[in-house]
Amino acid sequence: MKSVYVIVLLMSFSLPVLAQDQDHGQEIFNLWCSSCHRVVPAGTTPVAGTGSLERRYQGSLPAALEQRTDLSPEYIRIIVRTGIKSMPFTRKSEISDSDLDDLVAYLTRER
Image 1 (spheres, one colour):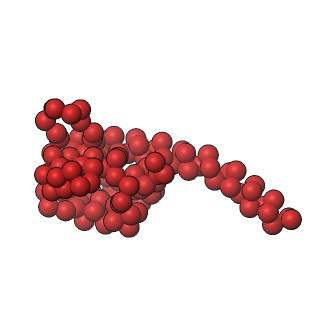
Image 2 (cartoon, helix red, strand yellow):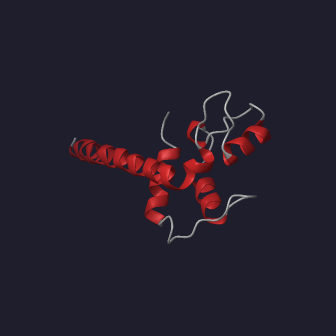
């Protein structure tokens, strides 16, 4: 019984932290990613990254990263650090490992 109490107690502390991580992750997304990967209203010209992904996926997957449910934490980390095609890599001096963890938490949150 004692172990159940400890688990519940730990979970109660981790949930607010997760919410904070996601909030900070959204701030990181807005600062570094949204200029190319934000959701755009239907009928408007998409931003560079979203437009590129629209052409690539042709409706089979959402083009806006915030609407994706298939991105793994590992994949996000690799792409942010190494870049892909016209997306540049991001240095740790730009997005720290801690900020990247929060960005990953935001993009992989349960929808």
